[in-house]
Length: 541
Image (tube, rainbow, N blue to C red; front, side, top):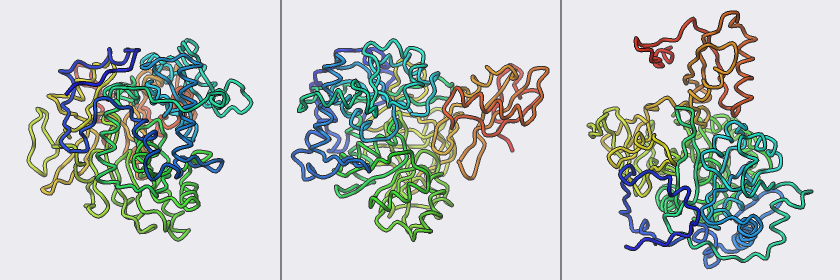
């Protein structure tokens, strides 16, 4: 079949993709995965909604306004015209997006991708140092940034060198804001005629080395994933109202709180401020939410609030992902609401969830079964499939595969055509997968991924620290805690004051969720005879 003609004039990303020999095999075995070679995912999900029953139904909601699919398309077209007209961007240019979950951020993301540009969404909590790493890697041509977050972005290395500059949004008094510029545009624009394999987004994720990895995801990848887990497991409806806490900068949030609802013709409610467990319960009741996305930690904290209100009668689907779901949390939520939680495991590299079961097929203790469209198996270190009931590495093949932007770690994730997410699992005789642990040093705390070496790098910049190691410690509330073991330089005392000083030092350089909640002091770190750090000894009780 002939490939689609690329519209991306800036080939920066394409030129830095791994060679075909290092990429995963792709399988499009289901009929719904047979997609055309010329497509733009925003045209498919938004523009074509004009011919569907939900054209005039709400898509994006907040307390301040509601936009139907038809109205959202007009807003997206105006923002796209700002990008290509006012800013002079061309297809393939990267655009950094920075903001909390909001209607404007959602519209901006859709406009970037509709214009054939590459969305590079960043977490609102990231600090200047981390933003600088993303800028250096992705080399964006422009940034769209929420006004309240401008100061941190301006301090990021390279932020002052973006060719098209930075445009603020949620800045009502700024005549050059994104909203003001968009209001001056005519609207009604056509989607960029991208090839299915043109790049839609770069989704940065932390790695165990501390250097950000940059999975690259195409228009085809996103639409293929819309036809896997959402179609076969989630089974959303056009009348659904979706709420949740994951940021749109995470693919968990991007899929669950924007793209998957659009695929189903549903609507999304965005709050005016970040959710707390109590406010998420209250908003879900207030807006009649039927689907909720958040991490197990949030569900655990939401349960008493839901129970106190007598449950959430309109809610029918609760999706848990981002960290392992303890069965005690599943049962606590079920007791509070009567809802069987929908668990799932996925990854940024493959965009979203690939192991999950609908509520009626839940097996206690299991994440679920492989999602239709994927093949999964548990293998040994050489990639040989293990007998059922054995602990081994998870390996996957499906309609998407990991592709890192210019990163030698590609060969660690993809081996012999299979994707290796870095998780240890057991598969039972009925094809249910039971999560065991991370196979690497990633710390998953309250749904956030933290690379221990990244925290170590910051701690070592403190004058008191001679050596350090950061590991995850099991925790009933957060799943894992970030714990630091430090060897001090002469003249320093490992007291409570120094613990607070080291924690503040990390918070000043990294997102707050990455700071070590526990700090221990050792005379020396455990090492092998060749000098390699023995992290497993630090994890022992």
